[in-house]
Amino acid sequence: MKRIILVICGLVVLGTSCKRNITDLNIDPKNPSTAPSYAFFTNAQRSLMNTLTSSNVNLNIFRLIVQHWQETTYTDESNYDLATRSINDAVWNALYRDVLRDFQESKNLIPKDVSDPAVQKNELAITDLMQVVAWYYLVTTYGDIPYTEALDINKPFPKYDDAKTIYNDLLTRLDADIADLSSSAGSFGGADIIYGGDVSKWKKFANSFKLKMGMTIADVDNAKAKSTVEAAVAAGVFTSNADNAQFRYLSSPPNTNPIWVDLVQSGRKDFVAASTLVNKMEALDDPRSDNYFTVDANGGYSGGDPGESSNYATFSKPDEKITAPDFPALLLDYSEVEFFLAEAVQRGYSVGGTAAGHYANAITASIVYWGGTTGEATSYLSQSSVAYNPANWKMSIGIQKWIALYNRGWEAWIEWRRLDYPQLMPASQALSDIPVRYPYPVNEQNVNRINYEAAAAAIGGDDVTTKLWWDIH
Image 1 (cartoon, rainbow, N blue to C red):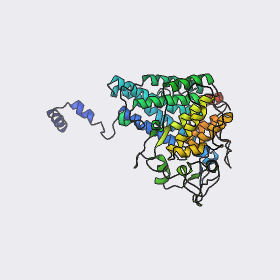
Image 2: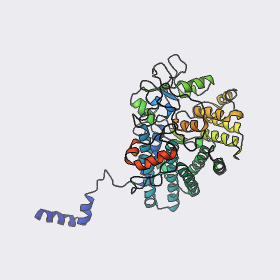
Image 3: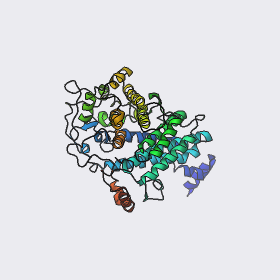
Image 4: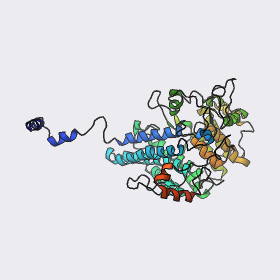
């Protein structure tokens, strides 16, 4: 007892209250119980871009599904085996747990962290915008999903919401975010790895993403698509590659290009080019072949057939710049925007320009982004096999967009489902037809079973061949 009294007296002599010091002993300075809002924002950005960009077969196999790449030894994923590695579970968890939750935590903390009302408003709008993007990938991948109750800690078994209803709400949120963004004030600064806190760039991105969301539903709700697209274009969308939304990785770990992590740092030789893409590009004399791939054993370009084991030494591989540690990841680019504008004109939307002009801009932007020249683009477009064909515009746009979306397999998969071109054949030993959606996670089936069963029934069956509401052809 005497020692305890002496210690207490000593604390008093030091001029601090006993209560405060004893409480402070419970705080681990190396593991803070709270973090600033911008830390959650940055981490969520990184998690989103890593998920979209990864080449890890435990997480992202879309390059294989759309036949941009092919596996060398193990071909399960090329043949649409999602179950063995629980790939659909991994995607679900990554977007809900690592992306949406962290963005939500950032939104919760911003009012406490940011005193300037204008900056606070911008940061909240940008964070919500990033959530809209993450929700877009979930709803276009699975269909009906937990939404209104998904991030509620008091709802451990969230109900599934109707996908179309979710989509319309995302468009409403997007409009509110655009209205709240003001370039007269700052935002996240360096904590924003995409635009460095530049609000004017975020506003242009938001309008461009609104264009994208409008075009995604063009086949199923033309009127809403038209009004959404026209409003987005009137407000200002991407006009050059300088507007591209890209996440800049660093040249040394831990914040490196996940493809470098998966293949180079790990010393793996898992992928070669897929013959479907290489053969099409070679037939079209595409100038991007040397930007996309290394040369094969014979000094040309060739790829492995989808679903087949493919010798690593024989075929072309992903180009070395793609596997560089600091190669940036694209979230949305100018080429994609111009393809959407070409389609919008073809559908009769008032967005200015001609379909052929926007189509040419899209292809040129892609070629230049990958290291080619405008001269190469002009020569490429002069070929009758490449020139825009208004009589079969879905084929023209679909094939060229599929080529331009190289290294963005998730986007290529969404657009392939929507445009129905190119007309891909299933892999050689496919377990199913080419997936047009991901099944719900096994964990949802086991833990949230009642809501899972209702959702599966509502969309027409929890199967990879069940088309989602916007994919009607």
